[in-house]
Length: 329
Image 1 (tube, rainbow, N blue to C red):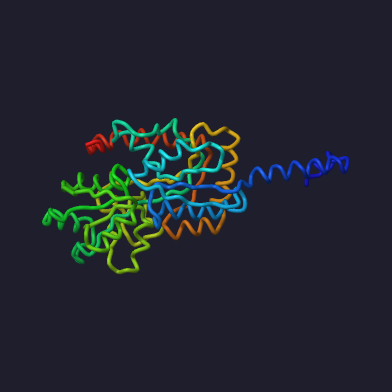
Image 2 (tube, rainbow, N blue to C red):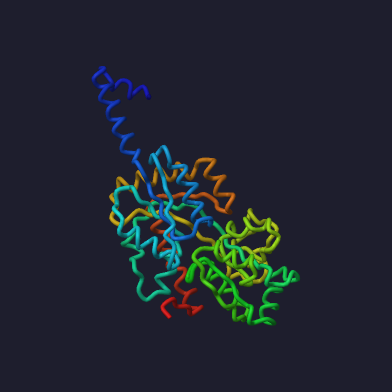
């Protein structure tokens, strides 16, 4: 307690009042159960982000934190759920930002308004994408140039999977095909992990997805990462050259996960949730836990997140147009 504050407490009555206020504030912070919703499957980077951060919120913001995987429609099901949830601090959405920055350009009509139907709270982490090949691709394929040559020679097997149609890793893969003059067919999954299982099983040739979703399978010896999408080599795969290093400079893209409250959440709740999430994201065990999955913990304030979403929405408009992809077909 500061000297100035100590001088304000002139009686035991005032001290008791202060203690009472403190207990009320603690009770307000300690909600019974917080539900964190993700639109992607268990075991992937989105799911693990929710679980790691949820651990950081347990005992501070909420007595219990549960994660709910509402998969489907490339993350849209989870957003539809959050838009109808009460804005009382008991439900929180964690989502890649592409559902808000890319989807408006590829869907004529979304089942949610990317601006009005959520309340941005903070970033969660930033990550790069990897492009990996599996048993379907010959062991001699070790670079993107090798892959392009193999795919052109074997067009019926030239495909790749991503966690969702219209997601950032989908467009990274599509841009690779476009830049290389290659008809690289896309297969959309409900998260990267289902795609990785098909990659490991030899059902698809390649996967474009968050680097952490890929590196966790390196121990199998069945996959090889050919490229990463950052502006510099990814610290979780330092021996893998970037797309830019291999001549594909236009494929320099990273993405963010972010947290959102339901629409029309009041400012006091947004600020309280922002503060709780910032504290959780700065905790060493959360930072280290996210790093296991190739994620770099990061937070900001709600206004900064709103501005970042606006910037990314504008950035992706010409990219989507150049590829010509639409999800409404």
